[in-house]
Amino acid sequence: MGKKRIILQKKCTETKTKKDVKDYEFKSLNHSFVEKALLAAEAQIFKLNKDGKLQEPIILQLGTLVPTAKFKEYTRRMILLPNRLRKLKETTVLLVTKDPVDKFRSALDAEHSVTEGVFKDIIGYKKFKKMVGTSKSALKTSHEYDMIVLDTRLHSLLPKLLGPTVFCKSAQKYPLMVQMAKPDVDAELEKGKKSNKLKDNRVEPDYVLGQIRAWCRNTTFVPSSGPNISIVVGYPYMSGLEIVENIDAVITYLTDRKYRPIGGIINDGLKGITDLYLRADDKSVPIMKSTESL
Image (tube, rainbow, N blue to C red; front, side):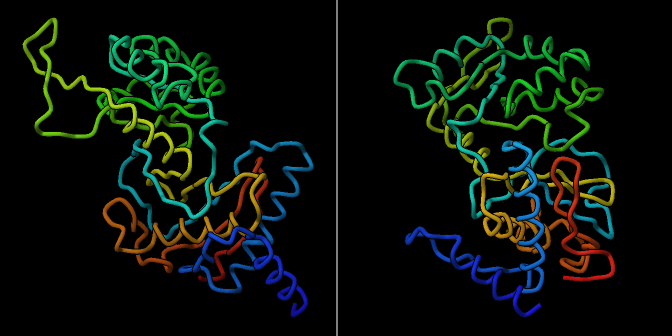
């Protein structure tokens, strides 16, 4: 075991080469579990690269003593990671806006706009309803895009629309939210064509771009009404150490009370975690079993 520890420590120090990147400080995983997590991560990386599945996500599966939600939730919450998951330029993004879509599309896809070419498609909600109206069409839509983001004002309509589809079978498939403009109490509102109700139809490409970049870079989770939470922590093109650092950041965010109410949702902190597995392509490698503790 002594020799294995030396090898792993050598890998940890050699993996990061950028001088401007500070060494990550582990907050939840002790040295023993860093080693176990590194072995699990490298095993998944090796298998996925061998099988040519370079875009297959590597998922941390946590077991908890107590469910982290009383009822089924649909809002994906962001966890900031030390190591980026995706590059925006390599991600196909579908943006769904309020109807009519022309106002939003013309601002976001205009020539020389900072968001020009960022979105594979920009569509209105009516068209999106047709694209996910049946289980078959919803499955096709989910495969066509790496990321689907909706105007926050549409999010309340999703549970009923997506309930019977593939989007509700995995917390990682549920659409993300984006605001079209930075909240501003002094913003100029417009009257609707069919009513006198004032609406905020502002579009700020810089603000939208910042949100999309953040969704690409970091990971998400949805509190579970069951005993497990699954969270993407890496891809096979990353190093094992980068994935382990992401695992530690995820565990810390979910267990530390200072991140409440969005994070810190696991009761009893680290003691509330029963087991940890690293899953990819339906194959799991244990990091911590129920007989152990962090």
